[in-house]
Structures are given as C-alpha cells and as structure tokens.
Length: 127
Length: 400
Image 1 (tube, chains in turn red, purple):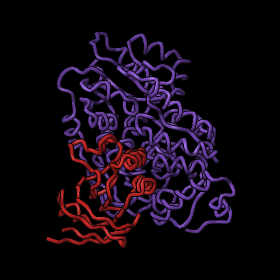
Image 2 (cartoon, chains in turn blue, yellow; image 1 turned 90 degrees about the vertical axis):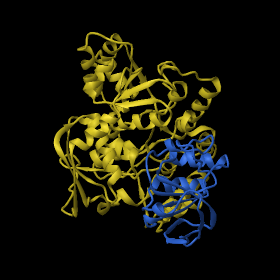
Image 3 (cartoon, chains in turn cyan, red; image 1 turned 180 degrees about the vertical axis):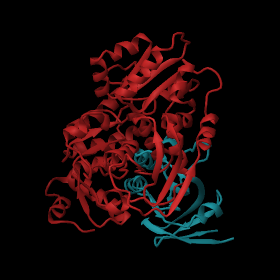
Image 4 (cartoon, chains in turn purple, yellow; image 1 turned 30 degrees about the vertical axis):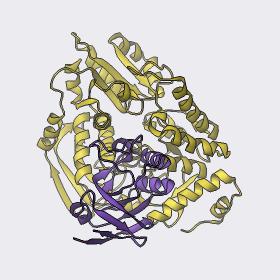
C-alpha cells in the first residue's frame, strides 16, 4: 500500500527513512539523550518520527540539540496537529526537518518500519 | 515577517553578534510558525538550566552566548538546577562528582554574567518577581518552564508562549519574541468547554483532570474549564499537568482567569468525578512507600504550611522520608515564621533550588518508591524507572 499526505513544511527539507510512531512526543522525559531510546526501548535515532502532537517540557529543544550533537537525532518530525513552539524551537536549533498539520490518518495508518519520503513542499509518501 | 528599523539594525549586528544571532533564531522560529512580526517583552524566565537535563551540549550552547558577550536586554530569571546550592546533601542519595558540580556552576556563571537573577525556581509567580517588575494582565513575556507559562497565561493574565528553553534565552538577549499564539487576543478565546462535576478538586485530582483534558483537547485555542479547585496549589498542579501531558500553554478557568472568555463555545464536554477517581486509584500505592514528596512545581508558603500542619496532627510515624521542594525565596519566608524549624522537628527534608525531577535523584534511587500529590512529578519519575505513585494530599499522611 502506498499512502500520501500533505502537510505544512515548517522546517522544510527532503529526506527519506524509516517511520517510528509515537502517539505524542516530548523529547524531555520521553527520549534518553545517551542513546535516543524511548521508555519502551524503541530508538528514534535516524528515524522519521510520526506523532499526533508535541507535548511536555520546554527543556525538549536542548534534548533534541544534544541528540543532534551526538549523531542521534531523528531525520524528521511529522505532526498531525499544528506544531507547538517548543517543537519548532527544537527543530530550528537542531536543524531537523519538521512538517505539521498533517491529517490524523498518518498516525493511524503508518506502522513502525514503513519507508517514508518527506518532500520540501510538505508532501509525505509512505510505501 | 515585518521587522522595524531597530530590529533590522540588531540583525545586521549593530548591537553585537550575540544579539544578532539570538534575534535571527527568534525570527526563524517565528517565520516557521507564521508570525507576522515581533513583540517586545518585559521579562524572561529561562528553563533548561539544570546540567542533569541539558548536559554538555546544552552547557556549550549557553556558554557560547556568554563568550560572544551576550547581555540580557530585559529582567531575566531562571529555573531550578541539578542540586540544592545551599546544601548539596539535601536530596537523598546524590553522589555528585567535582566535574559535575563544576559544569553546573559554569552554566550558572554564564547566565549570571549575561544578567540573570538566580531565583532557581519553576514558580517565579510565588516570588516577588511579578511585583518587582510590575508584570500585569496583558503584559508580554517569554517564559520557558511549561508549568509557569500555563500559570502566567491562565492565572496572572501575563502572556507567553511555551518558549523552549533555548528560545527563552534568546528572547532574553534580544528583548523580543515572535508575535504569535498566546500573545494575540483572539488566540486566547476558548471554543471548547470542559464541565467537571462540582466537587472541590485537591492537588492530585486536579492533576489527573489536567491529564484528561490534555489528552482529549484538540482545538488550537485554550480550553475553557468549569471546575472547582480546593486551593491555589490545586490550580498549580492542574496547570502543570496540562502542560506535561499535552502542549497547552493556557487553560481558561471560569471565575479565575482574569480575562473574558466571550461566548464562542461550540462544544461542551462533561467530565465526571468517576473518570478522575479511576485514574487516581490506578496510580495509588499498594503498600508502604520510601518517600513522600510534594512541591512539584515548587511549593508555595501556604501549601508548605498546610502540609506541615497536617503532618503535625499525625502522632505515630513510620520510616518514609518526607521531601518538600520549594524556591529559596519561599524557604526564607518559611524560615522567618518558624516553619522550617517545625518541619525539621518532624523530619521533613527541604530541597531548595532543585527538585526530584531536575536533579539526578532518579539515577541514584532506581529502586525507591515515591508517592506524591503532583501529576507532573509522578509522570517524570515513573518514566525514569522510579516506582512513582499518586495520592490525594490528605492521604499522603497515611504513608508517613
């Protein structure tokens, strides 16, 4: 199955990679800075995070920045809501691609490991 | 984005490289969010200052601005750090190396050099800061610390977005932030109302309500909340929960928020006390616990006083440790009225400048169990492998 979605390119760019689905994401509290792992043991490093929305601590941007400095950052963050300033400031300082305002279906229909292409106009193709 | 001539000059470096660089990031974030212009701020509060949280890359990020000669353009205060500066041993079990302490001190020195006042608390609203800088309804600020942002917008009517830690730092340097979200009148008008059965919500119940609302609220505008809160700390816990479990910068609380919600409600949602009780019961301790903890976000003087009075009424005592975290400012007030001495008499440890969340507490106490009335503390501690539980404030005495 091939799915396509259109969102708003907040920090635009082209990248392809593997999907990881996280219902809502706070880099502080949810992602371990030493190894990029979530509390459930999955890794976000080098992946394309697909999430309903951001949440939580304003310390999140520093965690994303630290992950980037260690080569553990995600390739892109895709959100099914309008992005919260915390996520945006993290994406700006860590230079991570961010697309928001995607339909909620992207969270429901995509599975961990699906191949994702992110285009700079905000279109997303999932194979 | 529209920039005035002064802002253009800053970007061109006429006021130094640090200020130019800081404003550049603010403009970039603002443009990404679709902001049309910038707005001058009256105060900044910076989160992300604990070495435990931000590590070496965060330290470097902050210190680079100091090395560029950055100075804060507006009064600036900062969040708690990774240990109690007045007593390194006040947090149970911490073993801090010399390098670790030096790294935290370097962060503090960098921020102080740039002009920060080291209030070291997540509750600047429980200090004299709002009064001293005459922060009033409608004023624009740039605050990090999600719980303080929610309190500023919802209770003080002071406007701030959830500025990420580094962004609050840059807004402090630039004296401006992007005009977006909570700064704009219309964006503060609720469209969805949550009606909670009329019982007086205590701290833990209020936190769970915050979690429920954060989980179901989809509208980009703040929710309107029709609920009764037992006291001010319950409101604090509610607001800390909505900003922990979700990305809400404000909740319009009927009868408390100093703004007119207007009449644009298009959806009403009922929440029953049963919904709250069920989630609370799931997280209640089953047997004994090692630590009873309050003060996340930092306790107010009244909250501390009520808690100590409650403990004094209990005569027998088990072996659980009792920890309360608060700002040094509230600590000094408590000291002056004899409350600190009373707390020490019943074996309460007081943590200033820090807390169980931003300190390495959970690294050194993996197997301990903690019961708290704070949803936010419960949330972060349980994600770090501590056995954390939630209980109503009046029930905390049971575990002591």
